[in-house]
Length: 104
Image 1 (cartoon, rainbow, N blue to C red):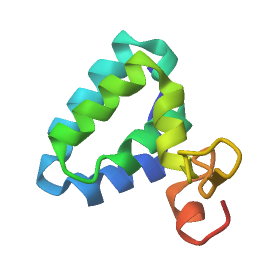
Image 2: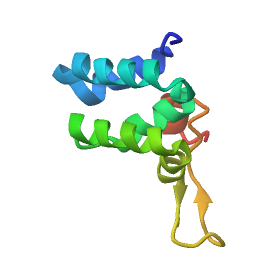
Image 3: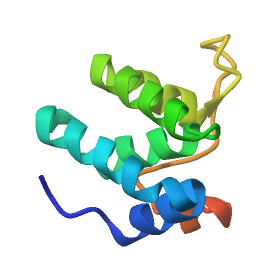
């Protein structure tokens, strides 16, 4: 497993606060077991989607395990109901701060 990018660790600390160690443990388990999840983009998408704490985080990790494209689609695009009118509004190949400043 590669070392997590600095922005990922910082965002996890912000989002999970006192549950950071638990979130980090779950993430490490998934990344160790499922090497194809070792992508900053996928990890950022999962963290972005996990607005409701640890259970939400685990649920999105499980979704990413089943098909990483799902979490990318959910995190980066709006108007997903229509393939003709969907719009990419975030690019999690970039850091969280780059996405917050609107440079996606």
